Length: 255
View 1: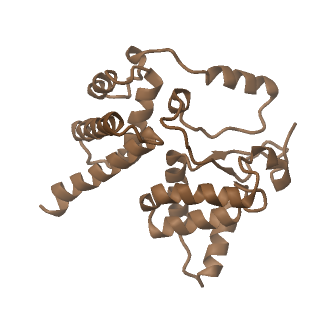
View 2 (view 1 turned 30 degrees about the vertical axis):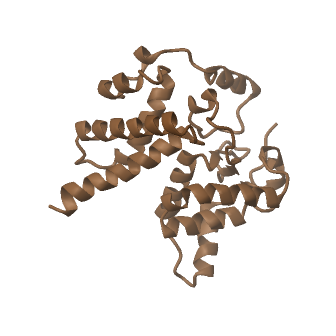
View 3 (view 1 turned 180 degrees about the vertical axis):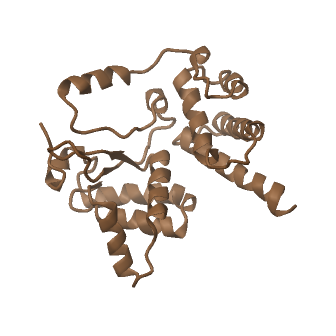
């Protein structure tokens, strides 16, 4: 059954919260842990998205242009750019704060995205099957047959580290496989590093692998000594980001 992109009530089934109060409580926990991962402008965009997700708690299908206009009007012509808003979306998706779904009009053309905020994880550590599969943008208007095929394709993989994609450096694979042998999980940890460095044309791959391995080593130490890591992949992403910042500071800014 198709869903009209302009009817927010049609997306109620995707809500993960019963009340607005519950949604706000989980969002506070997300921000308590990850607020420093966002710039000031990105936080403005995130908070505006949250306000548009109030009618159905945690669900928003407003167009990015509409969101930017309301920010622009509220801050008296000193809003944020579309690129800043999109950076916020990419960061929040990677951290697991919300999931983004694509929607279609009746004629098959793409409509505004659907933002579905996730509950803050309380189980420690997260279930392995959640770690193995990054959240992906899903087309809501696929046929039932296509959905069944997709579900089969997303079932937990049993492939070990020898099946990791060639895009992942072997030195990174060899290090991580001593702790996690699942191919998809290894690829996901590398993807977290790639999110940060794929635009840095001057970044040497060996330096990237060194930072990625060092970040993973710190994650394992945290898991072994404290075992209090709500989301290991997000925690690893944060470590890598900080180490990458220090790398460029030491190599370029102080030279």
